[in-house]
Image 1 (tube, rainbow, N blue to C red):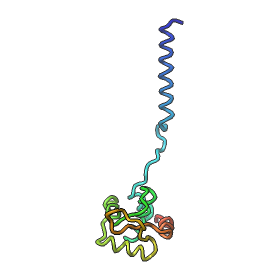
Image 2: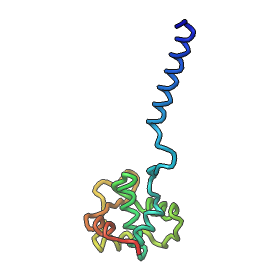
Image 3: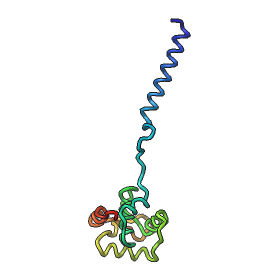
Image 4: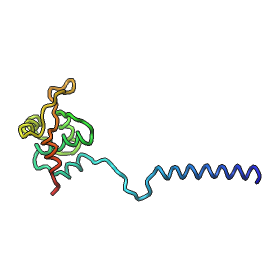
Length: 134
């Protein structure tokens, strides 16, 4: 074999190896691609009946999908905006009602500059996980 044919063959072999590596990294065309569950989709799947249940579902979503253990009134306010749902007039009162039901409790360590932060209780986790879409 002459040098030019060997060089050409080596070049083609390198290209094939690169293409094979690319194919191994990408899912096949038409394959299902895992994507993150949006807050809106999550709320639809749980179908909360009122604002207290919605807030508990939002706090669950923040904990499980956004790794946010404690939440504030501002976090819930932002969730209502993100989910494009009508905000209740007094979110703090509704969080208090969820606390009375034992679904959330005050966090031990609130972020700096925040008066109150809340965490989901075990009962709150069980409540959300028990909700089924109708």
